[in-house]
Image (spheres, rainbow, N blue to C red):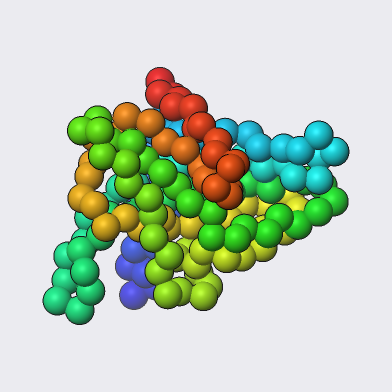
Length: 157
C-alpha cells in the first residue's frame, strides 16, 4: 500500500517536472512595451500574450474573446496604480477593437488595481469581437485619450 502511494507520487512528480521543462522550452510570441517617466516614478513593462486568446459563449453571458496580459512594475520605490487602461487592437480586417471593463473588482478580470514595487500583475482583457492571434495587425496600450503607446511584436523564436 505504501509502495503504491509512493509510486503514484513519484509519477505525478515526474509529470509535473516534465510539464515545467516543456513550458520553459516553449517560446511564445508577445506584444510588449516599456513605459517610464523621466523621473522613473512610472517604470513598468506591459505585455500581451496572443497565444492565450480564447473565445467564450454561454447562455448566461454575451460571447467574448479574452487575452492575458501582464503588468511588470519595475519601480524599486513606488507602487503602480492601474486605472482601467485600455488595450486597442487593430485587426488585419481594418477593424479596431478595445477591451471592455467587466464587473469584477478583483482577480485577473479587475481593471483597477495596484501593482506593488518590483512585482507583476496578470490581467485578462475581454473584447466583444471574436478574433484569433493571426487576426492581429497592431496593438496599443491606451493610458488616457492623449497617451497611446504602441506595443512591439516579439516573435520570440
